[in-house]
Amino acid sequence: MPENWMLPRIFPIGGILFDFLFVLIAIPIEAYVLHNRLKFDKKTSIFYAISMNLFSSVIGWVIFFIAEPMLPIHLKSELISYMFFNNFKSANTQSLLILTACIIFFATFIMKFFILRVLLLSLSEPVAKKEEEIQVFQRRRWRNFSSAKLQSTNLVITTLIANSLSFSAITVILLFRSK
Image (cartoon, rainbow, N blue to C red; front, side):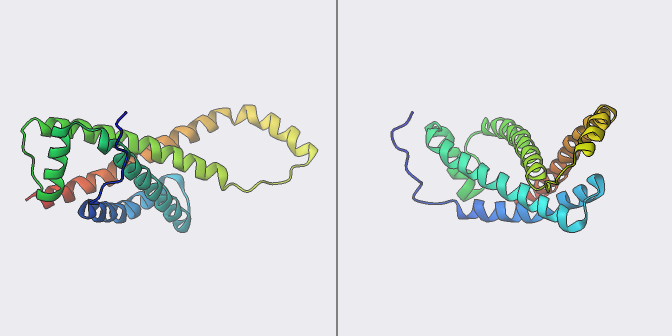
């Protein structure tokens, strides 16, 4: 563990602003997918898309600021070169960048799925149940077990589609930025 656990003196403002732009692009795309696939109303799907993207973005920046002091010197140099000058010093860095992008994609997908799941569970309104409703619920539980599996799978697939579309749009923007 490194001894220097300080915040950086220079924040990557350009990177943070680009992340803000990416969040602004990802929110409508993911809200559209949530609205069409999960049949939420527009206001609810926008709320879930904003929540997923802001929470995952904040968690991502926290992980970045924790992991950055632990990076080797040559990777820090490459990171600074890319953040300030938009180019890499070494040719080996691009393969590492592709690996990092894949890890970030799947980590973001998992974060967004769990954030959406927690939001859905925590925002469901508790309803007072009567005794006979509990018995009916127990009988229906066995019949609806397969549909619950389908809904859970639908949530995973919807989150994957939304994350893929938003990452594709962000990749197109990064390609335009590099030219």
